[in-house]
Image (cartoon, rainbow, N blue to C red):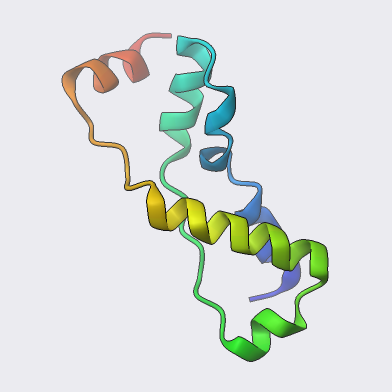
Length: 82
């Protein structure tokens, strides 16, 4: 995995849940899907630029504490509405 690939994963819309203000933003968040970050080896983690490493660590915490969204009828309906 290249640093550019990792940077794209770190900016996945699924990590922007703090700005779910309305149904349109919620729909975009759901449609983006659950982000999947690769587990880096200790060496790969140490080789990351400090800013990228911090962002990666924050995203790993988010992944670990926020399970994927369950597609309930209300969620499914809100995604279909345009």
